[in-house]
Amino acid sequence: MEYLLDLGFMQYGRAWAIMRAIHEARVNDVVPDTLIVVIHDHVYTTGRKGNASNLLKPILPLYWVERGGDITYHGPGQLVYYPIIKLRMPVGSFVTLLEEAVINALSNYGIEAKHNPSHRGVWVGDRKICSIGVAVMGGVSLHGLALNVNTDLRYFTYINPCGLDSSKITSMQMELGREVDVEDVKGKLTLSIASLLDMKLKAVTLNDLINSGLNPEKYGEPARLSVDRYERTSS
Image (cartoon, rainbow, N blue to C red):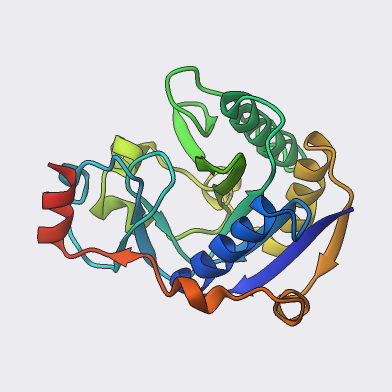
């Protein structure tokens, strides 16, 4: 039985620390595979090889994190999933399964999504609706995917998201021409991920995990970068 941890709406740095603590516990076989779902506050994050030129205007906090990929935006109206999985397959195959799970979930809303052989993530036509960036440490995955449901896409205009022009980003709301029930999407996408990753999910709370010894406080927050620091790190 694998865990499902729904963090609701949570500040990015706090959720990152929880993800790292669960990852450490999974590496040490203290917890089973765990699927985290969360909605973040407005924030930019960049992967370990992010390019400074893709930050066009620093209007939000910017964090450096361990995942692959370049700069992206997280915020209200966007569903973020962090699968903390002891991988039994190549990481490329794992990412493809995550893409397929999103494609299957979107089909419930009449959205025809697809893989893109040139760019990871999930696409509707030539527009990206879901970003995927993972890392693997100690044989266990962390970070994951971000699906734009009712996301305010204006925040993408201040960056080149994943190195792309912001016009290449879309959302379920934009594709359907209406606001979408985020909880409904969450239910369908969670089932889709669980099915493709062969997970039998048991809902747990953060208090459950803390009471069993999880200690997110040891991680603090990820490195928050100023523009100068980002330029030095990326050069």
